[in-house]
Length: 112
Length: 115
Image (cartoon, rainbow over all chains, first blue to last red; front, side, top):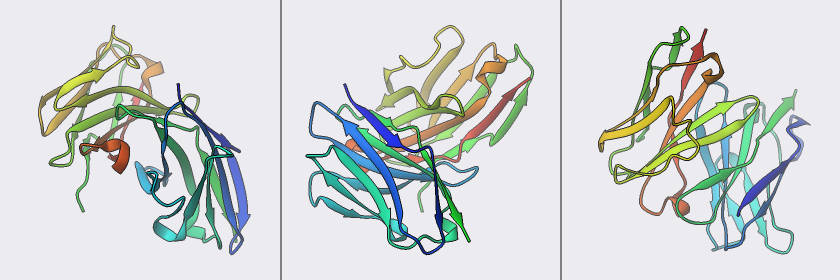
């Protein structure tokens, strides 16, 4: 069985501050991990993915995530938040069979 | 950019009516998924297909929902009869072989309201 837990359904940061969105996973097989972003009234867009190569993964819009096996975590970070980063972010896990399990999402609010 | 196209974008219908949602996956993608998103349940996988064959539809209420891929360029999700609890945003997503590795591309969704 596989699962994804996103800590914090809502996160608020000031513009220019560090963004940290937390994701922990559980998987009985080596996981592939993803972060998706959803802007209002849009579908989900792939932000970045970990597929067992480098543990630090860089994605679009300045985001990056680090895979830490010992902590079963895949937290998403961005050094400096921008107003356009306000969206909902989903962590996702694939353990095979082309089925992906999504977390419950974290809504990021950026305060001017 | 290649995109997944969903129609209609919005649908308002009366309880008991049939609803059909359509999805055009990205050309060459052999795996197609249907998800439902609500505030209460988040993202739920309803069904998915590989090479047009249904692989898993365990997330779908069988008595009223049906999903098909009549050809490689069209996936459909039907609800008959619709109920107010079916109100949600329905997303189609597609992926190439090895979707585990590459991730999905999502459409913009169909926002369904059943009154």
